[in-house]
Length: 342
Image (tube, rainbow, N blue to C red):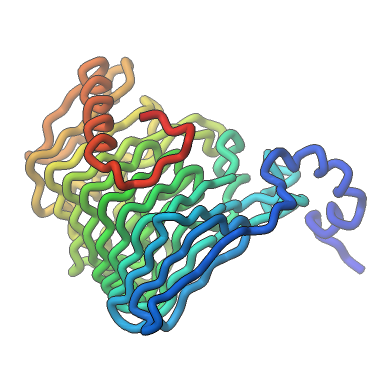
């Protein structure tokens, strides 16, 4: 029998070594979750702790409300706590739950609240931590979804919209410490991101089909009254982050209004994507671009078109801290974690 590296590691004594890497994410407790509905299927209440159990909801009547305000979900994408070039995120003994909440064929669904607590490694290199995952996955005919008041942290991707989830409306959500995309819309769907706080993400909103044959250049994505702060993570050997919007030539057009984009690393990547973001933006007003480092802005950084004010250094940091504090104070109904910095 011919073995590749991963098969060899599993069969040749990887278990004892990996036991040292399991960390505090392993639990023997069973989920204590409760699902209720109102009898006609137009309102579902999720409550309790779902642990590592995936919750898939499908084929709901149009316009159903899912109330998850008292529910806690766990997202975990790595089978060990410190993935590296030898022991990738798919090798180990830790439990995984890459997609804790999945909505399928739920047209017009209104998903409200819920906390998604991530166990995605934050210190390992992005390349070794890349086991695909998202805290909330919306797909397969879930058109016109409204996602409101979700609190998610330490995910790979925060919220992902895929095939036939067009017309999405994301509002009042608080995402933080996101290892990849706060919002992934790589199917290039039109939608609205409104009044959200993305407080630390490697990439803000992904509108990049990569090698897939998709074209969304006639669609529109609106970003309104939202705060997006980039957070630097280890990625391919450097501490860096991507652009607040990852755009390509076929990405949807962008309407960016009354929003804040904050860059945290002088070694940020994604200049070409940032340039395409500004090119795809057809309407901009009332926005602020914050350069948080004390380092000077690199001359090659593509600057935004009209409609953005620019602040740097201490002024930028004060502006962000005040805007963040005001957003949190204005959203008392968004669930918190006990150790959230308010």
